[in-house]
Amino acid sequence: MNQAANNPYWVLEGCNPELPKRWLKDTPYIEGISWWNGTPVDRALLPEHLVFKLKKLNPHSSDHGPLLPPFFNENPPLFLDRMIKVMIDEGAANIEAFPAQLHDPDNGDVHTCYRAVNLLGLIHAADLKKSQFVVNEGGPRTSVDFDRLAIDPAKARGELIFRLAESVNVILVHDRLKRRLEKEGFDSLWFLPPGEVAT
Figure (cartoon, rainbow, N blue to C red):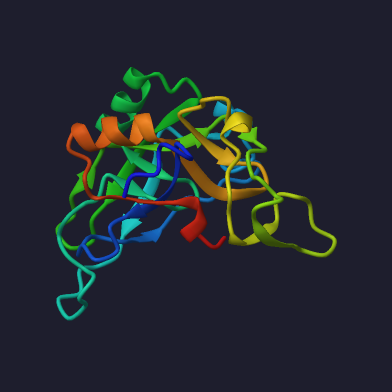
């Protein structure tokens, strides 16, 4: 689907939901660290490696397979280090990346080719006049629930990847970066037009 003529931004949801792959069981929680507020992480609070654990393979599950995806959309997000390099090479300058270990309970392998990622800077890029949404009572604007999300590209200022300030669980990617990632072989990533996403 080509939407770049009207809106150059896509929502990075994760990886293809129809593709059997490994899933995470445990993600690290560290007191005093937020991965979704757009501010730098205090490195002094972090261990040498952030430890993630995979779920055991379930041969009876249609969405479970041996493939390790390049991106786990968790808290914190986990990106393949080669994917981070491609994004930085393309010009993304707001990525903090921290060493991670991904433990496999099936064979004891420890994968060190991933990084926990913090995206610096939240951007108010939603076009609220064209979006359908509900603001949670008593909550900040970051807790907006969108039934239909519209993006104002001018507000995004050409940023290649960022979290949406109105709903911080949404990661937006510019079409230029999307095409570069796909060209580099990351074709299992799942990008959706903003209008098809509910947050």
